[in-house]
Amino acid sequence: MSLRIPPARVHVPAEDRLAILREIDEALATGQLTLGKHVKLFEESFARMAGTRFAVAVNSGTSALEIPLRILEVRDKTVLVPSNTFFATAAAVIHAGGRPRFVDADPATFGVSLNAIKERLTDDTAGVIVVHIAGIVTPEMPSIREFCQERGLFLLEDAAHAQGCSVNGQPAGTFGDAAAFSFYPTKVMTSAEGGMIVTDRKDVYEEALAYRDQGKTDFLSNFHTRLGYNWRMSEPHAIIGRSQLNRLNEFIAVRNRIARIYDEGLKDLPGITPLSLPDGCHSNYYKYIALLDSDADRKPFKQLLREEFEVGLSGEVYDTPCHLQPIFAEFRTGEFPGATDICGRHVCLPIHAAMKDEDAHYVVSSVTEAIENLLKGTLV
Ligand SMILES: Cc1ncc(COP(=O)(O)O)c(C=O)c1O
Image 1 (cartoon, rainbow, N blue to C red):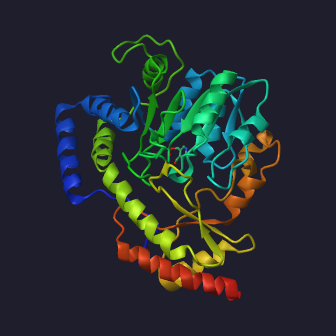
Image 2 (image 1 turned 180 degrees about the horizontal axis):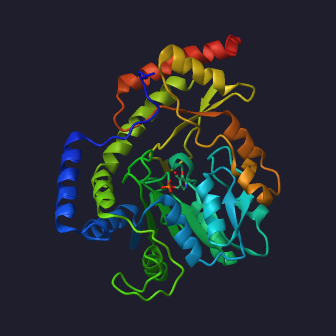
Image 3 (image 1 turned 180 degrees about the vertical axis):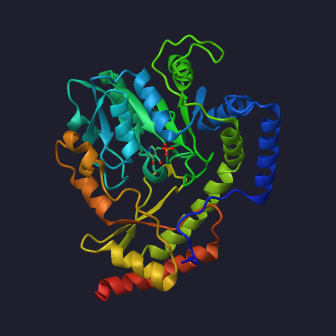
């Protein structure tokens, strides 16, 4: 069924598609198809946008996590990981030889608080991963960074959701030893598949270059000093990524405008509460999150929106926290009431860079009616 309002949409404007095709054609003609000039230019412009000294382009957000974890030496050590995150954040720790130890979520930010990190610290903890869920960067980042520095812990930002985000003027990706971005098609900007490691540390940068290309000392050598992998980014991916990066501010402005319409339209509705951004946080609104009351069931609510109003809500940010994922059963120690609660009762309203204001107003009126039905108990 085609929806009047789809939950998300990849947006590559027509003129950009033509420019992308021309550049891919040139790459095909020259035969320079991987780790070439477009990858280099993409890295340089992404580092400039993120406010870091270095950037290394890779083939996914997942490898952008695993490479720094290998460099930061997590083997046989514990790494604190939010329970409210994507599978890949915790899996990357395991692939790099470490053990994830989950940290409960702060319902105010969907991320982790400094207190929650402190509570979960152990003697063998090597470092902490924070995830800027939905583009929300917690104002606690400077204190988290300070705490990690005092304790000799590394800080890695999983910024898969957070291209162009900041808190109190400081960009996501500049707080830790390194940060990992994803350009998966659903993200605020895409390279089809791809990821980017950013860092201010020259040693991390140089090691990342080696790791992404089979652990070689340089592109043309056959001399391997690290257990790297084929984590390279191709030129066609970099061409798409560069084009999307040029649009990033524009995309974020549209998403913020849509978010303001939702904030305003939903603020007095009973039964549903938009997640408000912490003070000082500039979000890219990768997702627009709202919480249903704790006794509400989101399934019939979403079904009504889809079937009666043709409004598609995407999947949740995460409906199952990592501590409840079967594959992580052996790492399930402790209690995570915050993560369990928010994963169970939030919804994500449609948002994308090609959305029109009138679409957002239609979503508000549809949600208003659907919520009335939900509260009257007429939804089954
Ligand atoms: C929080 C988080 N971390 C890591 C990833 C992995 O990124 P990718 O799909 O590009 O490998 C994602 C992606 O989808 C994500 O949402």
